[in-house]
Length: 132
Image 1: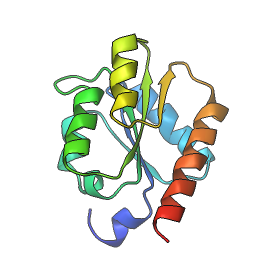
Image 2: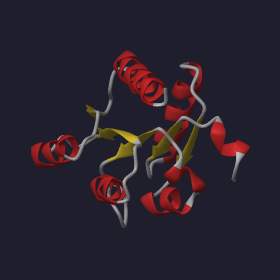
Image 3: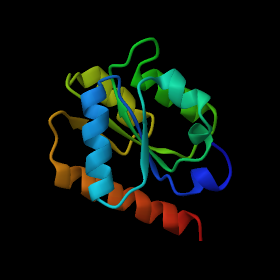
Image 4: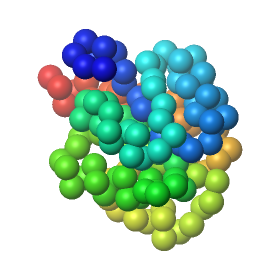
C-alpha cells in the first residue's frame, strides 16, 4: 500500500499471537483508531507502514526479531514512531531497555483497556502538536 492508503492508519500492532492481534484490532477500532497488524517484526519492517505510522504496539516476545530489537532498528533509522510495549513476561531488564530507548509505555498482559486508551490519547495529542 502506498500514498493515501497509508494516511488513515495511526496504529500498528506487531504480535505473533493471532488472537491477540485480532483482539487489539477490535479494541483499537472501538477506540476510534485505524489500525493494521503484523505477525512479525520483519513483516512490519517490510511494509510501507514502518516509515509512516505514528504509533506501534509491539509484543516484546516475537520470533526471529523480538520487539526490543525492532525498537532498536526503528530508533537507529530515526523513526518518530511512538512505541507501546505489551508483554506477558514482565522482565525488569526488558522493561528498562524498552523505556530507556524511548518507549512511551510497557504494559503487562492482560492490561487494562482504559490504560491503553489513555496512553494512545497522549501519543495522538503529541503527534498533533509536533505536526503543527
